Length: 622
Image (cartoon, rainbow, N blue to C red; front, side, top):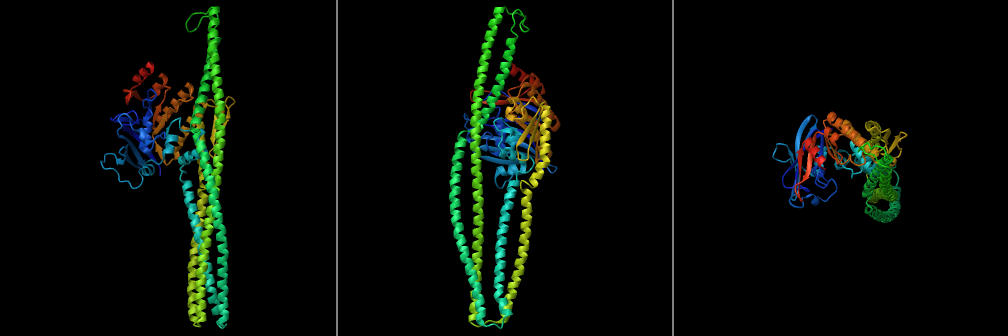
């Protein structure tokens, strides 16, 4: 069931630098810019939105840190969203707060909150949104500090793509099916043991009826043989049980040892803060690109310092001595830029070595995890075997008791052939019942096996990916052309990617410039939002870009990005919110709404809606 989620309005108070009065932000259709100096509270909107939807901080902060430190009062956040599902439109108001904790959901206009059974977060995700916090961070409300698709782990990419094409539940479904399959297989094994027991129970009676004229001793001998057979089975089973239980102890010891080793490796790995290293790598690459461009510009300036030639900027000309002095001065600056570039490059090489070493550590953790999973699978199999053997022993005991009872009856010489026939008829009736049950269980196992195959990576999931990945790749490359990048980017079915580039670009993502990398990441992001619109179990009017278009994007790429965002707004009636430090007069002309985050005093900020002329004046002042 697909649903459309329209974000209408967000209000908040006593969060971060904002005080006790309600601050209201409207998600208008079009391009909205939030601007202001760093640390004033631009990204507070993103935190408020995420907390109201999912009850957690967008950046992973403790919830206590969200509360305004000056007021130290409880904060509240509300979000108004319009949900259209199955042709029915309902507008909701989500209200959350801390100290005291508030979790309430209203149908707008109704003063009484909806009565929710179970977890509030789960209800919001399952019944209203259709997407989780991970999708919000990776596709809807994005920030450069969250990994872009190209820098995500394979597991993160899998979660994002699976959520977009409605496959996020397949892993859970497959696990449930396999658990049910094991349960049915256990029932089948027990049922077969019951059938075997039924058959063995019938044998003495069949013998008695067929050979009613044989003497009592022969009948007793037949029963004794059956009892001996059951006891021998029990002895053999007990030997197997000892071996299996000893094997379980060894497995538990090995698993615990590997779990400790895995925990130690993870602890060391996390202490090195891989996310921070990756962010540092992006910054260094951007710095290096900036220094390269700066050196190029400086070299160009030096080449234009020519004696007795009129300067195109000031209208004056240099004497020979002035030109030489100026060239020396500019050359010193040029050499300083080169030296800074070498330092950044050396730092980048050192950081790459550190990241490569960290990647090897992560691979070692993954190997350990796989080894632990393999041992747990072996353990599960042994536990299953123990359960079956114990059931067989129980059935053997039942068989021994019944055969012993029959033996006593023979010894008492009160055997009656009619009662024997009645007993055999009862056993045969039970056999028919057991055979029917076996047919039903076999049918259930066949259906579950088919379902397991369908939900496996090679089944239905593979078919869906083969259908929709080409669409996603086509959309990505459509946007790459919009960015005028002669690059073909394809995501593969194993959630990896490859790049085929023209002569002027690298086929390796790390070999591309920061601006080129950022344009690829933006193309993937835009393509994902388009695919959600086409096939997702939800659609939304919101795209929130928190400084996402700033890092490494040059003026040409920035202008192309704004044009694409404008087209998306017009085509899909979207509300796209930008937090950016790269605004200029040309970009302001393309934007529709502006919010200015500004300081009131040392402790508090305010967020006010302004017009484009006010925005231009602020930019000129800065």
